[in-house]
Image 1 (cartoon, rainbow, N blue to C red):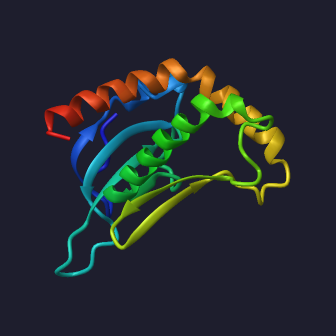
Image 2: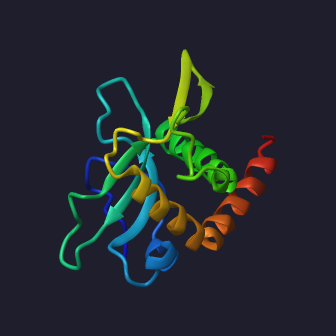
Length: 159
């Protein structure tokens, strides 16, 4: 299925077979494609690049399709990686985190640092964190494959 090119997001680089590689949902997903292109929120004279997940309901392109600035995609990747690192050692804590110090890390970025912490405002955090840890473990092979691919590409780029 071809990603639309007549909408506000203007695709430049696309993955139109994403439905075949969408993790555990491969072959049975509404996420049909990914694109990098010109952001739909661009104003005259200002051009931003965004990443977009294209969802298709079977009848039309969904308004639930997500568009993110590239730096947010990378910030999410940083958050995923740091979270995975935490859970490698989380078994040391009774509830998979230290309730007296729920902060996992502060990662320096432009102007400040991104704080990564366990969400203690969640009233069911002790239950939810165990479910999260199990799901992360269950998807370990799936996520690991993508991280290895990303690592190799980052090395090629000199990072």
